[in-house]
Image 1 (cartoon, helix red, strand yellow):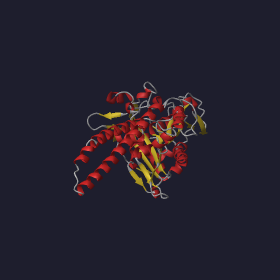
Image 2 (cartoon, one colour):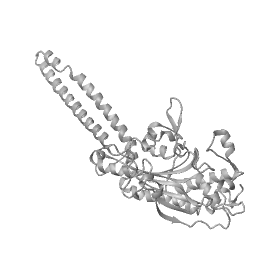
Image 3 (cartoon, rainbow, N blue to C red):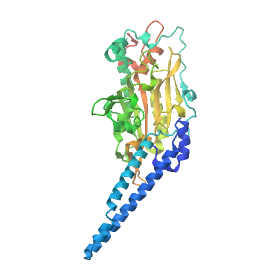
Image 4 (cartoon, rainbow, N blue to C red):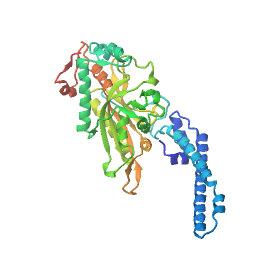
Length: 423
């Protein structure tokens, strides 16, 4: 969440920055709530002080053997008055917390202006797309015997898939290749995390309260949700903790399924497996000192790019404009892979710096060696990569026009040395 002190002191500039994200901050409501909070806080303190003074006088009178009845009668209402003021104070503070929790992270000054993806800025490209001398087929056509969408629909409904044989093996090989690269070459610690989380966990990373409709909830009294991304449980590993300075940075990598209702994408990308309710991702999470988070964003993005380069897949890096940023992100760099059948780049990883936004919601801190006091860490994450979309990119970029899909050199050791996929 936004630092409440900054919100009080810089309300105008924060409102302007949120406006860049397409969000109108209700300044009048905030200032009214804040004025009421301050008035009630002062009232609670005044009444507590009165009660302390009165208690001291009654104690002194009692010790002196004086009649304390008049003193007791004079302050009899203080307890009730204090209780009512404290109740009102807690109510307005809860309303303020709800208001602030619902505000997104303001975009960083380096984020390009704009309201939608049309204003995103290309930063760089790597490897030009192949110039096929045939009409490239899409992944559904190439994997028609190994991709069983009908069976998935029978079992679970639309936007699920069943992968068979070589296609299932390719997904497993891609996953293992990604994890090995990030652990062995980039120094991440592999973690295995729950696929179900509670409401507090989702609140910490910013999926709740705003995006509950995009989640799959577990009905009943458990109040749990299937994870939309490994970012949620992995980042929450540091919730309610104070790390030592020497522990930073922390780098975690996790492979998990992800579950999304895609409530905001109804009717979009329904062909094949590009956008599904259940999909696989290898997620990178970094927890860093505040002074290092911008360097860490470049580092994390490079780590995700390494996977694409090892697979020799054409891609580009794009800085998202303010209006296209996610709720919790201060800045995001998307990696978009080339899909020949669509003749365009499609997002395969989003690498984001959240600054202290998530840390404040999670109470995730480190002990500042200069002051000895806890300060908030900065958090970052990015896909390294989305496995299903990488599978699509391999199928489409490595087809030869004769119905054969060749295996990238980097993957052959994970597929028993095979140089082609028997789909």
